[in-house]
Length: 369
Image (cartoon, rainbow, N blue to C red; front, side, top):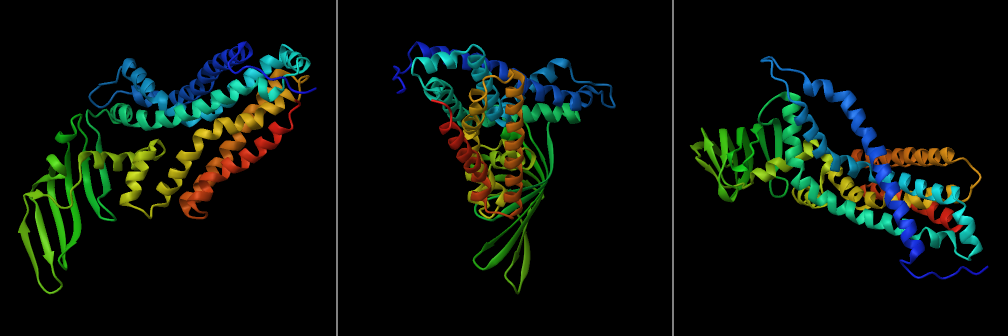
């Protein structure tokens, strides 16, 4: 029977889209909620433990931290949420024999599931935008609160931080105190080197405080000039070359502490300063491909549900979780190989997409129509 053409966004499309939306909400609480519970089981005692003075963070602070953490957990688990939601939707349609009715009306399975695929594509775009916005707006607040819960300090103190300024020019900070107002932050034990007119300049300071325009006020600052034959030291009150901002320092902190939370624009910025960093190169490709993983997993997983209508719903959902584990394994191994330089960053980032995309295209094309 020739497949019947349906109007786009007609009653059937709206019905399937509504099922997918409800399934997605349930899957979100199931998958993301499970990881929140696992994290709480691991860290909650440490968060609520009193310090030497007897102070212990309140439960409200812990709850606020997990609310700020939700977008980041979602970004890590979004493809799996999409897969489980699609499996739930297809299982509901199969259990109600609605695929059989669609076959009788001349409607193909692929056309019937079109709202699910389109929803996954929209979610992929939303995932990319969320990573760009959430990491900037919520990441700093989350990191402040997490440091407070773990160390019971009012302000994070970062040790042994290297900030790359310009192209391959590092500035080393022995300690950096992060404050709510970035211009009130403070660096201790600053050291940097640069070349100027054939001379090597070695800059050091006991304390550095940010000024406007990327300049820093130095306490006990000094500059050692070495032209190869003569060395002299002079006092230095303001560091205006190299120039870097408190935001640059915090970006380096983020790359050191939560590298997987880096947005595409942040990775581009870091690579401009440190172009040979394999980790950043691999993550840049990963950020481009990972949002599409949910759609690809649907292409692989949904044919199992549609092609085995007599199977039990629990078995179908189990297959979905198995696919999650397989994809996670391939993705993790490829990313680690890219970080270590065993394979190229482009290969490491695109391997899971190509493998599961090819498999999904074959399985989806083989569905009964």
